Length: 431
Ligand code: SPV
Ligand code: MG
Image (cartoon, rainbow, N blue to C red; front, side, top):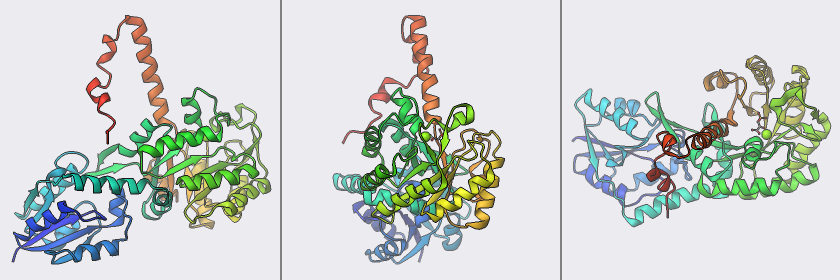
């Protein structure tokens, strides 16, 4: 009897999957792989039922002889273990992010004469609707909100990129590249005060009020499913912060990061060039505690951002604050620096980790940008935020285009470097 293997990464079985099983059955004994949670999150197909339930569900399908857990999105380990004569897959992976996985399978099979069987992907209206419902479910507050904690538990490091509009949200949601033979993408979005303010032509001084920030978040949420971390500036008055915590939680935001400054907040990357006042430890700890007291779910995170290194108050002050803010209930610590050298950030992480093995650490390597995600993870960092690179890439490109149109009195000269009209009018999917 020949062995046939197929891997599923779904919470809902539809006609497409049944069709694959029916095909597989013609060739021999059918083993279905359930792709692990860890591997699934890299596809942004975040599971909403557990691994165990998926294994049980696949096992109950007619025609399935055995179910195994496939730990990795690449097939090396599973092929080594099962040596299937055939691997069956829908033909919808020939293009797009999964094409690298197809290459991986072809290479593995060719080593021992195994065969890939591709089945026409069933894309009827019911299947399309199920796909859309699954995606929509991920965007629902109760699923989106808890995803950040799940990601922190499952990923070596969670990668967030700035979003300040529906369009930048789509870039954060959909950008996938191949890296080391596997698809890679961002895990979460950072709604930066700097970029949200800049997009509105305003300075980053808490002038853009919470109603406006919420509007931005809602625009992003409309078109994405990934978890959102809000840059909450100073959090404002503790008496106001508690209301905002409730609102953010209800919307499905996963975390708010508030910084220990008071009075007129300016962007941290000014450092000591401008007047900025750090809040007292007790005062800020009380704000954190009030926020934690107000929140209603277990999912939401309030992360304390420490500005001691930015304001040149020293490492000891930063570490003392971190301890105090965690004691007050902070679910994570963001440590910031405007130095080009990551040394002070790494020293903080190492010393903080020596005393606290679990509280998540967040960093924003805008200035110390030579450090890699892997290095940060090895010093105990859990979340890396690329806080402003999208805005900083868009602005000069738009400015150059505007200048060139003025210069040439027509748009022909700029057209070659622009997105084709066909692409911009089809960029956004219609229902
Ligand atoms: C932001 O993105 O608004 C931040 C990070 O707060 S920084 O600009 O580095 O202060
Ligand atoms: Mg900010």
